[in-house]
Image (tube, rainbow, N blue to C red; front, side, top):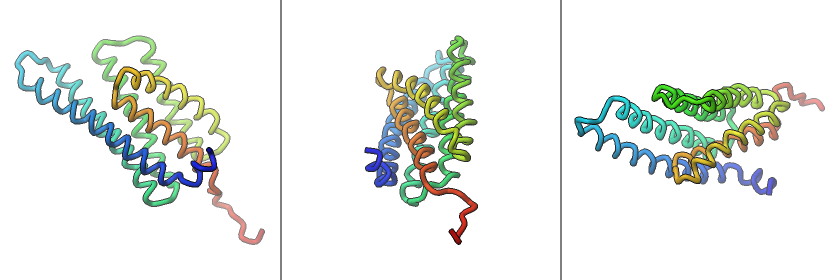
Amino acid sequence: MIQFIKNNKYIISIVLGFVAVALSLSYLVNAYDAFDTYSDYEYADSETKFQLLFNIFKGCAVVVASLLFIILGYRRIMDKGLIIAALVCYGLLDILDLIVEIRNSTFDYTCILSIAIDVLILVIGILALTDRKYFFTIFIVFLIDMAFNLLETFTGSTIGFALLILGAMLIGAIYLYNQEDNSSDYNYYN
């Protein structure tokens, strides 16, 4: 199975990218419809409007991160810059989502744990792209974060499923990037 994924990594990246974009666009359409509906009513408070606008931003960020994987697949090269850009979109989106939850006074200590996990994803993810010895750590942290996205998927959230796919693509891209020969000090004489 791993050999199949290695051989078809760019096709898989394109297909999963399009699936994540489709799920995100479905979420985005629903978020825009809700914002359009609530903005017409006088009783809609500013917190509700802000949350609905943030949902539109969240859908756009997932679309951008998924498009980066489609570009990665079409370029047929494991580009470190594109992987880091998708990782930053993924991590910062989750951090901003939790900050919005805290702002809406739905704070609990799991928000702090989730923010810590997302910061670890950003820091260790970039380190794992630089040095292979951090891969196991980022794998464990991603599995923890993807478990939360899996719970959102079970509730019927299309954006949760898109984030689950995006997380799987990120961990796969980090693994496959580390499997390629990316050393800059290659000796042609050996």
